[in-house]
Length: 375
Image (tube, rainbow, N blue to C red; front, side, top):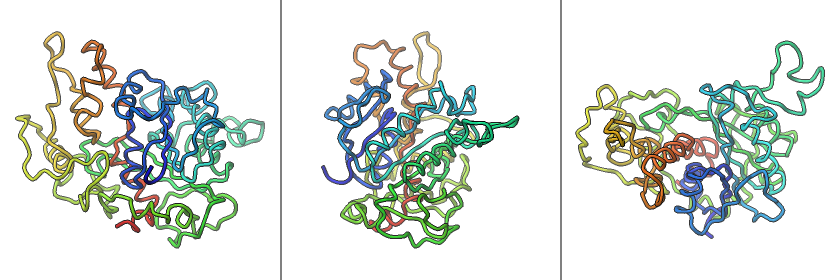
């Protein structure tokens, strides 16, 4: 296996892993999901990769160690669109505990976690907030938030971490879809201090085990420097305007994903001439055409339903997520299912999935010396 071995938790259609592969290379060693639709996609796309299934039932001592562990733990209880139960006992979002257990047992050199904006504000349980007088105790509890819980747990396990929040539109996509990404590395494997001065990025966790705030330990010098960076595949460099773009931005403005050398599972190549779908995109035209230039021609946004009605096309959502045509919607994946059941499963998977170019851009910001070494 060339490049890092990647273990994937809460895998969905594999979007987060595609982002990691676009930056670091490597291959999936195993995946883990129980959603029936996601399992169909994973089995079709990664036929030789085992699916560990229910993350809460895995015996991690029997699992192949990996170099990179990825996971976007369930967001339903963190999202502003949900009931905001938080990362607390009994919620689906508390499945972060199972991922934390995997990290503790497997000790991967690098961990990549992804979640929704609501993780900044949703409440969370933790040992530090479980007693009278602890953090979060009192009439205004909880003071601990989900991102703080994740960073605190990682620090307790001996991992240093940095995080960044970016929108899909920051990499050229025609939608906002803000996501938080955390990159964490085992502090016991540090080979040197990162020379980047404090303040290069505004969001930074307290480094574990006593490193000072002006430097951040980094995996470079451990495994990152032994061939991974040389084979890393860069699609674009950090955009100085990141965080300032909008869904209806100037389509000619360079984005994080401006092609400088294209590779990775979601590479479509640059289209010098695009097929006109005949759709009147209205005020969204600039954003749509910008993404077309970076990916592929946009499919029609709607399709005819079973009753003759216009309804959202999963193929269009697939395109918006930056996936190759058919990655989720290939009929071969859904053999034996009715049109309606297959469509619902596709939209469910796409709604829960990660936009790979967005994940790749986040990693380039969080691991700059890895990607710069490969430029």
